[in-house]
Amino acid sequence: MVIRLIGRNSRLSLLQIERVKKKIEETFPDAIVQIIARSSRGDAFQDIPLQTLEGSDFFTQDIFEALEKNEADIAVHSLKDMSSEHFFGNNQFAVVERDDTRDVAIFGQQVQEKIRKGETVIIGTCSPRREQMAIGFLQKALPQLGKFSIETKSIRGNVDTRLRKLDSGEYDGIILATAGLNRLLKSESDSSGIEAILKDKKLMILPLIECVPAPCQGAIVAEAHRSNQKALNVLKQINDRQLMEACVQEKTRAMQYGTGCLQRFGVTTISAGNKPCLYAAGENSKGESFNDWWGLPRLVVENKKIFSSTDYMGSFFDYTVRSSVEPIKEPVVYIANYKGLNNERLIRSLDSKRIWAAGSRTWLELAKEGIWVEGCADALGLESLETVWSMPLLNITKHNVRILTHEQASINWEEKGWKTRVSYSLKEKAKAGLSVLVQQADLVFWTSYQQYQQYKTILKKDVIQLCSSGETAELLRKDGVDPVVFPNIQAFQQWRKISILSQDAA
Image (cartoon, rainbow, N blue to C red):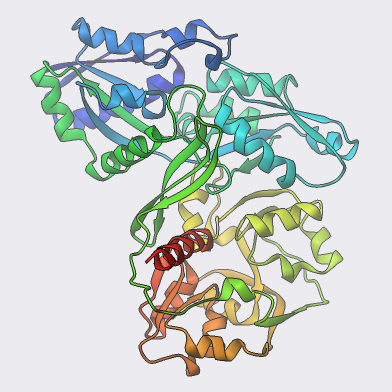
């Protein structure tokens, strides 16, 4: 059986075609797979922002037409480049694999000096979505060493072309998808060139919540014409059903906010434990800002009292910061809470480290101290980062990470094989009336296991306990509690708001 694969002739596209080729050969050992490379309409307009052109499917339309003419059996695309109209059209598709979904901002070494001088930082992007979300985030997330501004400048070209433009100083920073960089770094013929450019660059892995990825970012999709039975059979066998379901959901939800190259929003799948949820945020086609979650837990809340520790975050503990600072040997430091860094010597000791934060709030507080933060866990829990850190782009392993946390959490992390450093202690405090609210609650949301420990003896016997995914959920289970788990605090806040409104309406 001969299978003709077709796709764009960029290095990244050819690597993606090779991935599909390998999948077909593994599934059909007798297959002979041929590769056809073509340029696309999007490749022909390298100096023009795509949002200024009419139409869509700039990188895929020419490839679609080759299937129509029977010049190839299966087309290979980056699914994020394909319009929803085409994806839900007459042809058949298979999602073969998906890499990390995040965006990464890559900066030249000069950026920090420009910030100190209060100069304008030039960032290359041709994506309205990234302009809408990432630029606003970076204005706060870059080290606040001076009163600087950010200006965007259109950039086109393949990944390696954009990296060379950054390297030449044409831009101070550029924003790319991590998936493309990971695939190039996995390639024997491409990795050395990419690594050479990245060697002296500074990275920021943009958070999923504040900088939501494009729908289906990181997914490789294979397409066959509806009349090509041989190709349809191949797609059926190489399709990853779970990935396909997630991509269908993302494309479906995206259509309700807007279509085309002017999208200023993102849609992505986020897991809370093993349960996938969908998150979308940005600005829709009407210019309205939104952030929405789907797939959150369903609970009956009618006539029930909800207590959320998020409403009393300063009322549970006092923070005592350690005055002594021992040198940290590990190159990567994970900071669980910015409140544990009220020590100038400790802050300055982090200047030479790769810093990761528990969530974006801690990230932004660290930025105020002039610290460069490489990324965060999006409040999804430290262990959600293990797959992120294993990316070729980062290459961070567990043994070269040191966690800065408090005494109780340190014990739990050390038991799981992590290295820790106690930078602060928690001292319980009681706010008048807080115990009564907890005692009367039918549903309680905890943001930390330590809060639960403080009040667990006064909870109702039939209380429903809720929390974010990660270590809190794991420790509650260890203590015999079966919590209702949300992806993070923001997801819970939306659920609570909708639940209360529904109860009021009833």
